[in-house]
Image (cartoon, rainbow, N blue to C red; front, side):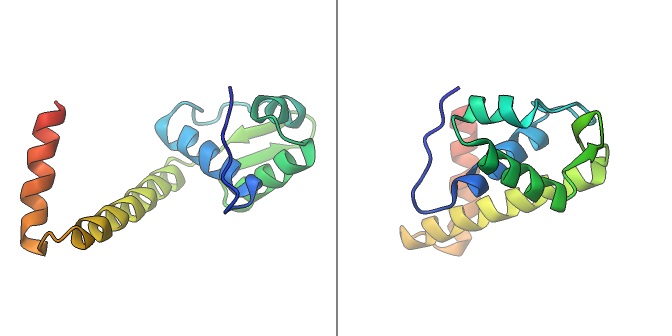
Length: 122
């Protein structure tokens, strides 16, 4: 798996974002064991220290936890994952809102344009 990293944000934070999306989408299942730091570093084509930093951040955010001799696991806390999912949705919606307003749409038009486009995507 090849990732294209952006120079405007630290790589470890970009990895955190990718892993968060994998957790909330269910690609990384609740309670599942993560690969080792080395294996994840190979997957992302980064230094193991960078991957360690990303995993430490995910632990700090209670999205993964460590068991001393067993490795790291995705949190079992479904509420934490649901909260993160809601938070990411809110951020994405705010970004979309900002873009549509800059495009000249009025606040009152937003629901209509979004619903129309959702129907077209089906």
